[in-house]
Image 1 (cartoon, one colour):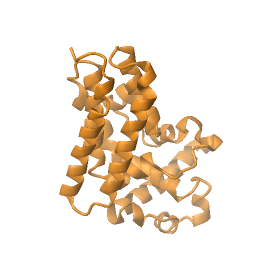
Image 2: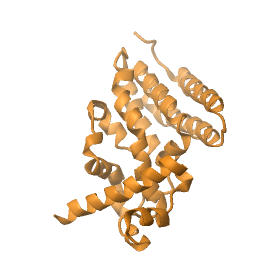
Image 3: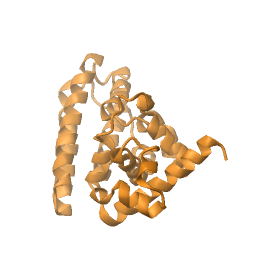
Image 4: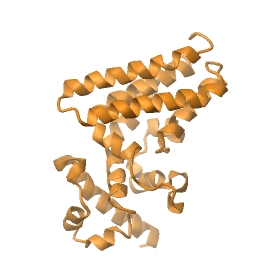
Length: 225
């Protein structure tokens, strides 16, 4: 077995173990010691594959985004234009993420140091799909430029640029809109991680969708066709 294949195989083993722990104990239940015990490796070995515990948790949590990634194409297929598509993408992202706020927080607001050279261009999420090629589907192929970005600002910027090109917003307002929407989402998602009841998370989800839509309204240059 080639070195890269062996590395990917071992990473999959560790990620699968972390996924099992998340399913049983939640994100907070994952530890290097527990993953090492499940896989039969010592803790030091895991640190040769992952930057730290947050890095392992991030990759394990990406597995829980399957419903979002696989359902995105279907949810947005009837969008008439870039503005509708933008709104539907945010709708679906909020619907999925507020059901599992700790998972989405671990992925999109991770403590992993992305400034390290080996994380340049968010390589690790590309590697995730090398480890789990079965996760690649029609929806992933259509939205891969956005999905492969772990930075929400960069993901949203791709969509906003599309709206600017189609005349719905001014290019000069992209940064302002982007910053407002991510701040709204991040703050309400944080609240959702502390919500004890499902109905509380649903209220926060609806609030996020409403606020994210409302904050872009003053910048719209033309009505939907």
